[in-house]
Image 1 (cartoon, helix red, strand yellow):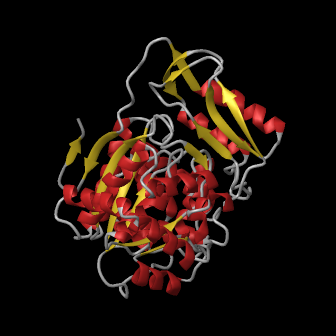
Image 2 (tube, helix red, strand yellow):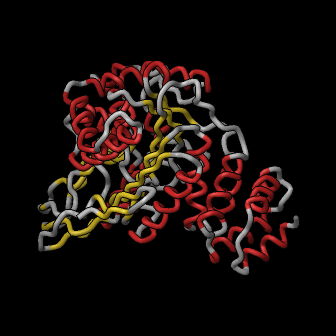
Length: 443
């Protein structure tokens, strides 16, 4: 085969075979296809798209580019969860303990944050001593014994995605549904779980701002997973405003603890109950979603969920005392109130810019090489439809004391909020549920 012929074929809108896609992925991963040809190939996919089977074959080729995780030694059904990214999205820290407390087995490989979205690993590593760099043997042992483990991705894990994503990032081919779906699902399939719950975000703080694009991505990923023999459910949920109130690393850990204790934000709690109940149903632990919700609510109330979080922390080298003493988490040098410059009602939030404010303070990375400050972030006080008075606190900035960074973040934060004279309704949160056979839209 020649790469030129495959670029020409896809450029002209023709379907590529499984063998052709495996050739592209294997040869590029080995360094035998130059970047300029791969960039042309990715751009051809961007403009010409892919049919369902092509997306499946591309994903499988990427999943097979490195080592796969064999979870067969773990008894029972293994369940995974993935979010397409957002601001204040700390659901994994809550869901994994809750599902494990109900008898589920959560084996999750996870990543770091980049850009305006936070990463699960960064949040967990703000817990003193916590390590996601555990061996595969320890990962399997923890899931078998405790029902959960969270592990960072190794260099041998789906290497094709790393080199392809780096190229997509600089060639304006990131926002392509088949390329996004194959990137996400190749890692999920290689991670070895039997079922996967997807949380696809839409809105101003999501990669898929338009609902129609989010729906197309959800459908593509569900189809890929089902074709690979996985049990799949995808939800499309709102990112028109931050999830919960905390945006940062250590402060998100605290909010996760509050939620596990039953005192967390309503939107974050409701999302975890919805996703968790479906994880239990897909795992075969319950027969209906309503039965799953009752189980999830019960382990929040009887504190078995928070006990599982303690177990997770301890089993991966962290200090479980942070659960009852959040002052043991990294603490910012200063906490500064940001006040509203006018009175009225919050009409709209540019959630993407709110995420960037946290990044400016040091809670995220502009490049993969950047280091983060786990103590900094933003705790917002107002959401869409909330009333705000002039001089009233909009948010509390947790900062390292750098006045320049604070001033820049404060200016962007205030511009991210639209305050008007009329009260508007809260944004729709749940949009749709996508399964193998159908798409159900929430009313």
